[in-house]
Image 1 (cartoon, one colour):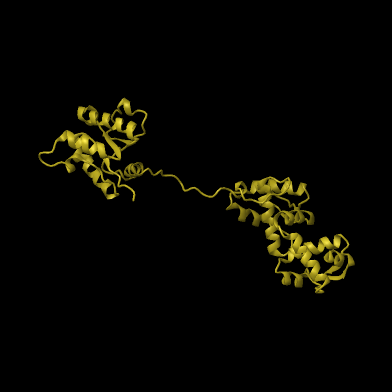
Image 2: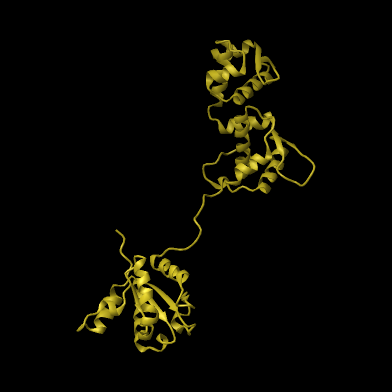
Length: 318
């Protein structure tokens, strides 16, 4: 269980009623057990023992209220000296609070202090003190690192990490659509914006991917922006071999269905293997390119295989 913060509040007697007591009550309202001499002493107690052997010795932080009254007080100066020693010896946090725009003692010139110009209203300054006592820094929350700098991103030969992330996302869009006819640049910008990737970065990647023949850009008139594009068969082939470890086995399964089970359409093969139709289409396209099948395609994207080379059967038998 975390220890309750217990700061010692060093101050001049003249500042007690006008500021210190109200300030200490507010700290206690925040769960901070502020140590103020008048709350800790009973008649007959030793002032020196209570302050130096109890208050200062047990405190988890040292708060000094600087004012025109306290900077002239020999007693406060002694407490400050003890607070500085405790900071050096025990790494106890020392928090100066300045009232009246008074001069800050030379020994505290290299310590960040909190100015309270108006002792009638100091909610913001109180929050600063509370954060200091608890060791909490008031800064925005830390978000996730951009996708392209994470250690588990896809590796594609010759592509920079950010180019790979953008191209992978585009390929996944195409797979979702079932074809690569048109990937909208606006969609890519919208979906990757939350990953810390800007439109300018996407535009640069589009130029690189087009130069590598991975995509075909559809440029239009007007200001430069992320254009719509099509993923080439060559580009998609690079993606599947990098991103789908069992792509080779899937191609063998497609061949098996063509030869042994006599499936004739991409749709039936995709359903049988429970694979995206675009992956099946790419496998069939590769087979056709290598002379292993003959096929036709209808307007709705259905591919019909009407001839399978005996070579496919021989490869399966092997």
